[in-house]
Image (cartoon, rainbow, N blue to C red; front, side, top):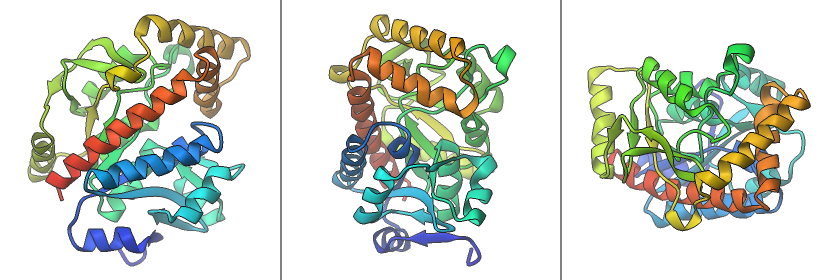
Length: 302
């Protein structure tokens, strides 16, 4: 562990050493998820939500050849305003570190870094997944494979609704990743509470979710758990409204031949425009709800 390029804030290091609950947070949502300065406000709100729920937030990013586990406010402010930040997943984490570039961690990279740091619970907005027209593009997010490999409980509002949701959750089942719905029997669809897909598992008590993670470790099962927490009802954009906006954004992306890592940022930007900014406010609401739930789970698994 001493050779790992990990750098902890004193707050996070103290919490881990004392066995207190810690929740990992990604940084891609800050650098690539929404415009400045709303991204900075959101990052501070999410950290505050974790603290208010009784845990210590650990926002993760790659800066100066180190995996930063926790960011002080000045660093958070700098990251939120930075340009040209590398979007880091499993494939490019090592290169980002050795090249000294600044990198924002995706779900997959945040899981890797959290596990290295000894953090068992991670809150995010939505995971990546199987993209539309996968039979032509073979575009499948590394997040899915990471969930099958890295022992971290990921609290999300499902997969991003711009994806092929049925194939995403079918693939997670194939990989043996437990998908656990909270408070309802349906898998949520990010901005919407109901994707139309039944959840394979349901656990409403954070203590039960933490117990399931402990049992996986006892059994020696690889990988983590995906907890799918529906967006609060008052912040939801109903399926009948959001799905047509997604379809229009997808058509524009195809027409402009946007591909690979550029697809998701483009689609999220277009959905923002088509919903007159409501998608970002919904995104913030669901991330805050996920942060609170993650803190409750972490308190039971510390």
